[in-house]
Length: 153
Image (cartoon, rainbow, N blue to C red; front, side, top):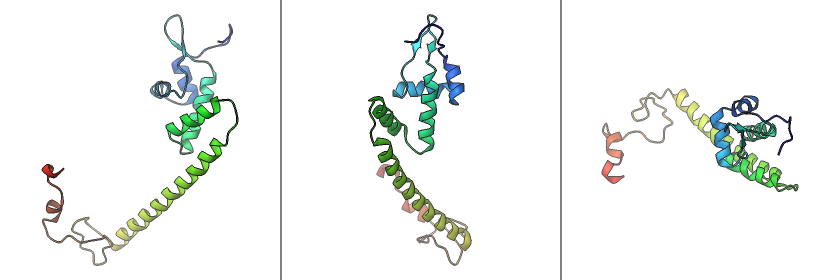
């Protein structure tokens, strides 16, 4: 509990100071990322000032690419009160994940550049002579014939 004179913050104040919207704040509460706040005698949520710092940490972790589930795990580890290598291990795993995404995006970018360079004008009926797309359409009805019927789904 806070002592008298130590201010609690209302929902809008916390959201504004942390740079999030009120819906995000409440969502994080439901997910257990931040503690459910006390209520004022009038029923308003009353957050301790530390909530702003915690929200700032959560948003920083998200900018590093951590999912909310991963953030929750890291916060839970930190709440146990003893140092662990969890952040470092998670960060190393995240680097590998980011490197894989960069490789995938590089491949996609290269393929798109080939499509642009070749002058492709249609995904299914391309008329450029050096089309890099994997296959040309075998017939004018190909898109319809190749797609599954609704009954097959």
